[in-house]
Amino acid sequence: MSAAVEVRDLRRAYGSVRAVDGLSFSAPAGAVTAVLGRNGAGKTTTVEICAGLRPRDGGSVAVLDQEPWRNPVLRPRVGVMPQAAGSGAAGVYPAARVREVLTLFASFAAHPLDADALLDRLDLTRLARTPWRRLSGGEQQRLSLALAVVGRPELVFLDEPTAGLDVAAKHATWSLIEDLRTAGVSVLLTTHAMDEAERLADHVVVVAAGRAVAAGSPGELTRHDAGTVRFSAVPSLAVDDLAARVGGRVRESSPGEYVVEGAPDAHQALAAITAWCAERGVLPDQLSTGRRTLEDVFLGLTGESGT
Ligand SMILES: Nc1ncnc2c1ncn2[C@@H]1O[C@H](COP(=O)(O)OP(=O)(O)O)[C@@H](O)[C@H]1O
Ligand SMILES: [Mg+2]
Image (tube, rainbow, N blue to C red; front, side, top):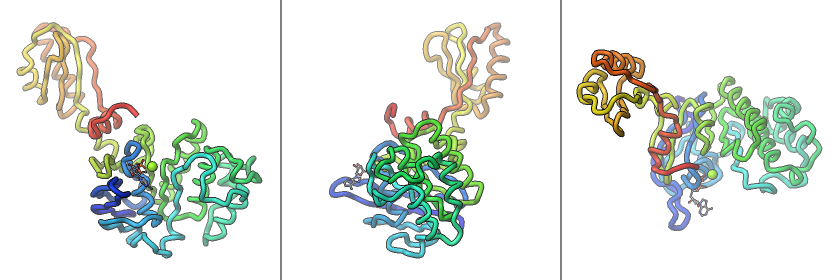
């Protein structure tokens, strides 16, 4: 098995809303895959279909080489953390206490994690006897994460695991996800936070309007712009000549402001620019290199601004 999750041409509509519209991607086994997209992109629908919680209209889905819909074989092998529907979310019996429900979930598994250690790790120990309905949204979310992983599943689906968490809880969640990966667990998480995808993911699938618009490692997605260099100098330099020297494109974005793009390597571009300027007695000023961030790539791909 090379992919933990393999999705081909997945489709799912709600009435006239095509929530997932020809989505294809794979999530490699033993890695963290982030499905990155804005609200309404179709992430939750996709996760619910992959987790066997929702049927699809079309396309194929293989989860650990199995059909996910109505397949009890997958239940002990897969952990699911649904998207938080706000405080008071359904899914757990409202009167169940934190430790009770976690040990109950652990009892379903052949080799569960230690429930108390997990409570401690997610800062839930002091809430061990608190009923679910009295937990805050963030506390419910941390318990929901604990429930997803306590059975030592081979594959974990985490739908926006850190949305709305405070900084400490977010870092505890990230660290737990990093340990899952170290333990060889396959993780498929959704997020709209670029920093989360950049930090955690081995593989990122950018989704917009129910389709994958790009996929690759964070490095691959940001690499092709690694050679962008900006500098200031006297106006009207011979940009075509400089372009030939650096092996990229050069434009004067405003008088005396130059942007060098598409150079194969930022370091070589810097060296070529300074040498070329020195030959002409020109002093380049405010030289800066900029690798695009995942956020730039994301906004460029989805054609939308700010989150
Ligand atoms: N149960 C539902 N009934 C009707 N429309 C839905 C339902 N669930 C999601 N949608 C719509 O489907 C689209 C994708 O939603 P969703 O999968 O939740 O995306 P995301 O998780 O990326 O925010 C949105 O336009 C949303 O409004
Ligand atoms: Mg969602």
